[in-house]
Amino acid sequence: MFGLGPEWILTSAGAPIADAMVFSHPEQIDRLARSCPEALPTAVLAGDPCFDRILAARQHRDRYRRALGVHPGQRLVLLNSTWNPTSLFGDSGPEDVLPLLLPRLTSELPADEYRVAAVLHPNIWHGHGPGQIRLWLDRARRAGLALVDPLEGWRQALIAADVVLGDFGSVSYYAAACGTPVLLGAADPEALGTESPVAAFVRSAPRLDPYRALPPQLDRLLSEHRPANGPTELTSSAPGESAALLRGLFYRLIGVTEPAAPAVLDPLPLPPYEPPLRTAPLLVHTRTAADGTVAVRRYAEPRHEPDDAGAEGAGAEGEAGSHLAVHEDTLDPGVLESADIVLRYGEADDPRFGSPGEWAAEVLDRYRSASLAAYITGPRECEVLHRGGLRCRLTSDSVGDPAVHASALLARLHSGPAAVAPAPTTLTVATGTHLERVRITVDREGTGRAARPGR
Image (cartoon, rainbow, N blue to C red; front, side, top):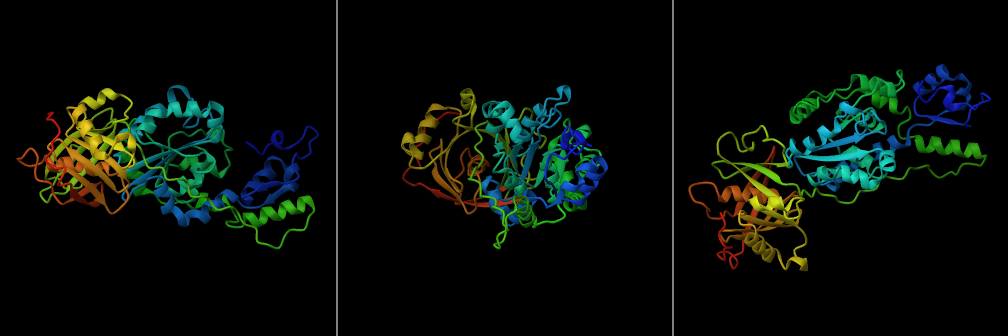
């Protein structure tokens, strides 16, 4: 039995290696009794401190989501891999699905409807080195993948997740114990004890089909998910009590009287704010409804044309269109020559760019294909300049990516019989099921001084 056999826990003389072996559930002690009865006297039931910290921090789920830049209406997909050649981030030869999966996570899932993050086992980082890991994931990160700290941030990301796409590692099992839907991209039954709860979970969990479109699989997983009692009940028989149980054990082992003060665990820290910074080109589909609502779907560097013929959310009726939005720091500067919108994120008073207006005029002068330049100054605001001369500020009430509002404005301006319609005072933007009201403040002094015409 993996991990509980005599070869793992007994000395060569047949004595237990440890003075105490800590278990989180009696089921584990029962397996120990069957596999190595000599070690049974050392078994101690003391709960699971990791799971207890997760349980205590679930009240802060919204904060963790905001820290990862998850906006209203978005789903957070958490990719995770354990440390094993057959894991999701392993090297299982022709069966390795990760090279196929990574670009599809960020190109098939609409950028404003999904946030994608990855948690990799610390030994993956240690074995390959941080530089190599970041190099392997560079394209995915440019397309919006968040790389979560493997020691301090994975629990918070797990709490924040709407769905976990993982393997047979502990993160997937903790996710199931929290009631989060799990889709397995790799499953190796030989890597687990066949009688363990984790093995039972892996045998029954839904499987990812790497050759089918991802959005329908995620939709089906979420609609059919029913939390299983097994992982929740078998993770710990003493939820919330591990601090007291473990401290009592430690003081007994060293023969010192235990303090009277309550035993507590460190709360999970709030991670730093890490919104997505997509420097990969964004293919943008729009549909402008008769009432002016603009539905937007953006795809980061799609390898194929997405299945939808236009953005949904404004209904089947309306004028459809598409354009290319590109961050100025994109990996291939040549893409900027065909961009319809050029993007920049930064502080409004960054002296390197003069001002948002100066930067925008410079960009439109340089990239003749672009109709709009958008300088995103914060999570609620951006300043835009249209080649026709319109200069304005877009402001929303909720935190998000204002670049999507710039795309909506371009679609609205270019809809209808006129090449550039009069600027509206408000803009309703639909991304998936989320509607956002955006205020448009026109710079009357700057409007009318058009950049030199391009297209």
